[in-house]
Image 1 (cartoon, helix red, strand yellow):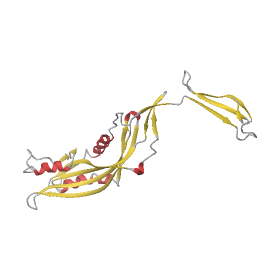
Image 2: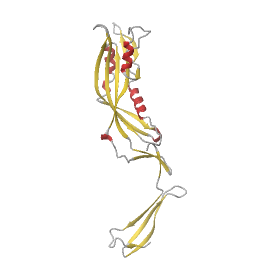
Image 3: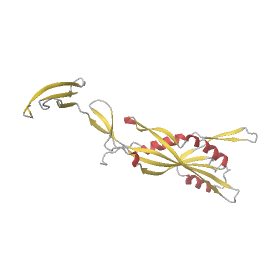
Image 4: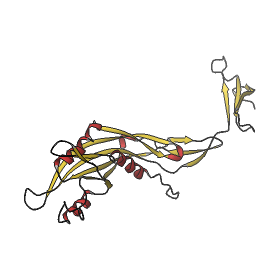
Length: 254
């Protein structure tokens, strides 16, 4: 069962698609006169927020440009992966693509729910709220993206991303007035489909069907044979009634 190697990069594609939603968020800095002084694009990286918070704790000052990492910034990571029994389709269903005598086929996917946590880190509340308010309006409570799940077969799916909760934590260093970092955490859930290997499947080239007349006085009185044949040189399926066999005493005579 596990002898054939395959890799459709389902998790990698999902993570990449999720990250593209948040990779162009900006924060504006205004002066006392209300004029915009600076526009900053908020950096986004994959990884746990603890890594960045540990970096902050190891630095003596957030204002020293030589050592301080820039805030605000965002990070995201996978927090859970659970089987989604409610979305399961019959496991013997197949998706078939291609033309000719052989076709590419793949069995129906295994559905899972993936949890992703997006962390927003800022050194002041206004920066954090600017980021939050550029995200929340698009999730009511879900936002849908399209993922190219199996490119070689052209399988694409619309994946809803649901915002389930928002949390807030504030880290301090020193006295109460010395704020270290503000961290908002947004928890999302989205659907992931895991496909098995792509297999080559042959197609039925010739079909023969024996037919009887069920409305006749003697429904077994005759039998016709219908043949659909696609094995000819030009590849066109030819069909015809090719014969009639008489039946004696309820038994078919070849």
